[in-house]
Image (cartoon, rainbow, N blue to C red):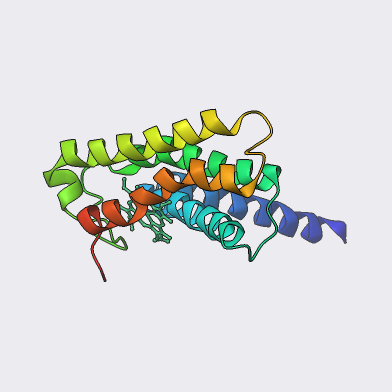
Length: 151
Ligand code: HEC
């Protein structure tokens, strides 16, 4: 009686494993999920800057750390051949690789400086958070204009 039940559990565990293996091998999906985390962090950070969400140093630090991790990992998921498919990455990323590298370095430089400024516990108040995050936010539109296509 129990055997079929166990078989079903094992089958679902196996299929969860298979799904993550496929995701791990899909650079387009990975870089988009990194940008979704950037977008979510920007939503929280922007909300706190506008006073729509109560500021706390821990939340400020979480926003900055998410930006910094993303800025340092995003560039690793643009192998040749991933300019087509379900992506809004512009062909310019591969045509002007040095320009894209420079935009990534600028983003990572700003997020790294924000990390350094935020200390162990995060920026003490919302003004310190704004000062740290301003240069990070300055990168979104610039890079999207140069290296993203509208679909
Ligand atoms: C160095 C370049 C660069 C910077 C800086 C950058 N982005 Fe992006 N972003 C991209 C590219 C390229 C894509 C398209 C990825 C794809 O579709 O393969 C993208 C896609 C996105 C997406 C859509 C993700 C999806 O689900 O397809 C969001 C949201 C986003 N970016 C938010 C932001 C925000 C907010 C910032 C600033 C804090 C930012 N980005 C900074 C290059 C950048």
